[in-house]
Amino acid sequence: MRIDYKISDKFDFKIFIPVLILNIIGLAAIYSATLNNPQAAGNFEKQLLFTALGYIGFFITYALPTNTIKFISIPTYLISLFFLIVVLVIGKKVSGAKSWLGLGSFGFQPSEFAKIGTILLLANFLTRLNNNIDSFKDILISLAIGFVPIGLILLEPDMGTSIIFFSFILIVLFWKGISLLGLFVVLSPGFVAVASLFGSVPFIFSLVIVLVVLFFFKRDLFFNGSVFAINLAAGFFTDNLYNALSPHQQARIKSFIDPMSDPLGSGYNSIQAMVAIGSGGIFGKGYLQGNQTQLQYIPEQWTDFIYCAIGEEFGFVGAILVLSLFLIIFLRLLNIASSTKDEFLSLVITGIFGVYFTHFLINVGMVIGILPIIGVPLPFVSYGGSSFLLNMFMLGIVLNIYRTRKNYA
Image (cartoon, rainbow, N blue to C red):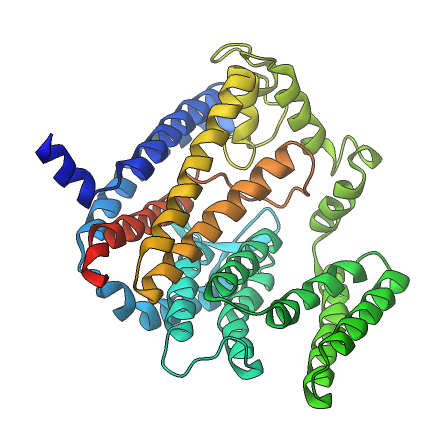
């Protein structure tokens, strides 16, 4: 019993075991989704290779000196920006986005690597001496750290990954203790941007709301003018960005508002996903027995729509099991972040939580029809080498911090 206590004190099984179970469920679902699909031949075997590499990377990261995490923050961020620029020049276009670098029969998605680079540098900046998260200057610098990679990713264009970046940046700033005013400065451009998609009247109405809130906070003219200018620019930028999106990406946004407006086109995946989930019943149709899954009604179901295969073949019980495992992971991440005394390490874990949680929320949300289909995989479950390797690397960082947490008390 004493040996077990020592092991658990250095290795957090409470988060590792749920991840392992999700990984096993994911492999089973990927096998089912690719079994009768010639276009996906070899994907299951590739995912097995990614899984092995992911766990090797996890244990290497887990064993590194914890101070290495802060040491690599700046170079990791700069290298990630370099690859984001490279992919715009020589990248391979997949699903309308130039976001992949080809490596033989494999591919590498630089935006995945950029997530951890951005988290590390943002945490580094926010924990430097004399930093004030509520100062306009430090808020702008924090946003700049995140919006440089976001801007490059939007040029691909990859809207889904950009949303992930914005979400985990917001979560890190919230954990740092940003005030209501600071939170408003960060969120208001997004609010105005979304409003601008619905036309001129909602756009103008959103700007009026921004002015009213700024008046309520009673700050100086320069501050109010700067915030309003940022919001105004966000609205015009979003409108131009929407027009620059490829037709199929614009169609995805339209189908979110009304999937039935184009049931055989942009709304097809959303409708079929909901059919698959709903047809599973309580206990599912049985492994390898799902009609939607085995007859390939949902294109590339082994990636963004893997949750459909689980819901159809394992039913409500399987779907709830996956949700419960993620809930355990999220609660455990927040527990470790709150108990870690070193602020930099705490913010790093919070950023990692933000990546996992946003991926989970968007993926499940788009499958059940409450969020638009923007191509976001389910962590530890969906097919994808870059995504799985990054997720395991980030998990290695979390457990590395857990292993040495008492050193920073």
